[in-house]
Image 1: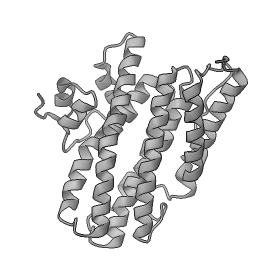
Image 2: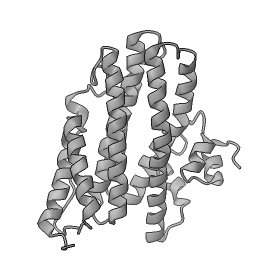
Image 3: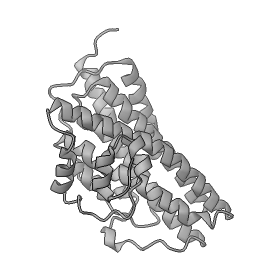
Image 4: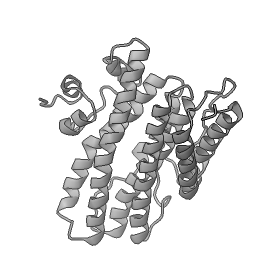
Length: 280
């Protein structure tokens, strides 16, 4: 195979940039697939002149009203279409955000090896599929993405960690995505007694798919976090120092899912420190 030229490598990152900035899921899907196919066949050479940009606004800003987290309405009533749609929308927003975060993990850290790039492009493909399932359900309920307000917490966290790759892996997959493993079983439990409703059952089915695949996503983040610790000659316990640095170490975690976190690579000692729960 002929070596990859700098111009082609630059095009790869320009395509990624376009995918991240696009507010069209169809475009994100097409461009992500192009990047995945190309990366599968080529060992990318980092372009010395390439400089990843810091995005000022998330790609969904054109679709959604962005508010502070405390301004979001509490979702309690899932018996009505609007109540259920608000929950579906909130989860769809997380999945939409996760698409851009996975793509950004490839775009921003161009020096990383091919296996790393393929891992996060695969994650982006999964997140696109998750979003599409949720968007379809949202449409069945009579709503669209953007009909409810959202917050930009995940985007903000990704930009705040943009200059430090180790921090990015600790904060995004190993904190925020791992927190999803804690929360999803609780949501499923709340929905269980309403599963006779067709749309609720559909959401349950979607969440179960997402839950299983998110364990793999967190596991990828765990692997690359530990790889970066090794490369930088740092102990993996720096994870807690990083959480403390971003003032999220003491955030309340009502339940820590020890079983799922263990599957994703967390040690029992880490799990106990995070949630004071039993872990064997």
